Image (cartoon, one colour):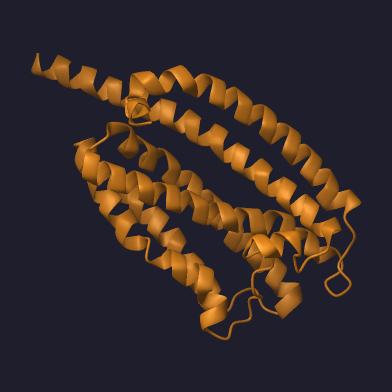
Amino acid sequence: MFGYANPKKYKTLSHYIFLTAVILATLFLGFGLYLALIASPPDYQQSETVRIMYVHVPAAWLSMFIYVSMAVAALVLTIWKHTLAGFYIRAAAPIGAAFTAACLISGALWGQPTWGTWWVWDARLTSVLILFFLYLGAIALNNAYDNPDKGNQASAWLVLIGSVNLPIIKFSVEWWNTLHQPASLTSLSKITSPGIHPDMLTPLLVMAFGFLCLYGAMVILRLDNEILGRKIHVLRLRTING
């Protein structure tokens, strides 16, 4: 797999992965929205507001998944100095920030009718807000240096240090008394016998897979732009040095 860390070899696969991701995202998000907005029943307590879950939960999952993938890329960049790992952090950080923002905003919209407030300094909410700031910090560090490699390395260290926040997000509802409900899907047993009705679980999983495919397409587009931008940067340096 390390062979595909070379940008040239990566390009041989990216086109096909991108097309597949776009097709799957279109199909799953289209079908998922139908299930979420039309086919699935309203909740007996939350009524129609429960439909926010079909955006909020997949966005929350993606916000953590993207950061985990960035932490892996940061580790690869720090240890093996693979160029594509730095490109990936640059490409993924803004998308991760967008999904985290969607999670926070949809959570506020869901929380107001459910809890009676838009925001509380709850352990889960606060740790997700910190995750959003970590994404912004990675973006800032990526663009803080004239030398892109230094920016990549600085953001990689921030991502690695910030990864300690992930278990706090995951287990915050178990470690502290919070308004946020516990996870309904925490293990394989929860998937086979979940604390959520199948009529709601199915659109939730379909939407989550659609979000994942959408992320795949978006990150490949940004990776291609990062690689092209680096080529332009190198050509400019050669022209200046002459």
